Length: 174
Image (cartoon, rainbow, N blue to C red):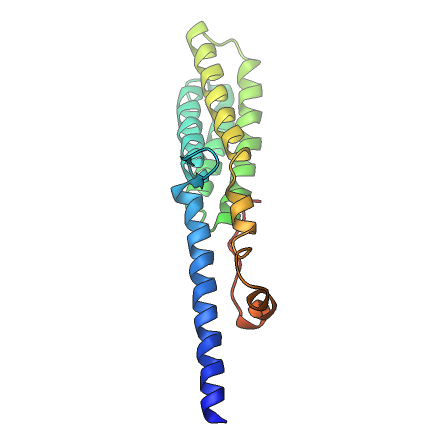
């Protein structure tokens, strides 16, 4: 009886360890990128696109600091950027990215209503284009799809006992 209990416990611990590793591997794709087998390349990770958005937010805020009418707005943009940079979890990064999106677009809208020099107007448009392009790349990422399907290859039995093993699923960027 004790032997059977030890075997069952060892099996459950092994399955738990395997599922935890799969979950960590899935979350690593957020940073490292998603290998697209059908297309034969690694799609850049969402984290790299978030870094691009933070860079553009900084460039844009720096440019707009020269306009006193936007002083509070540029500080709000820099604050939203810092919050995204400091977010520790994938879900936290999602939430802060949404806030950065709203703040960036609000400042860009105000900036376009000002009398900007031709060079500054072109730079605002470039920043906005790059910022929006990184968001489009995030939306087209297959990370969430991979994170949701991380245990699809597991057996039926493993899927049944997973809730009892206290294994968390990978975080999605949503």
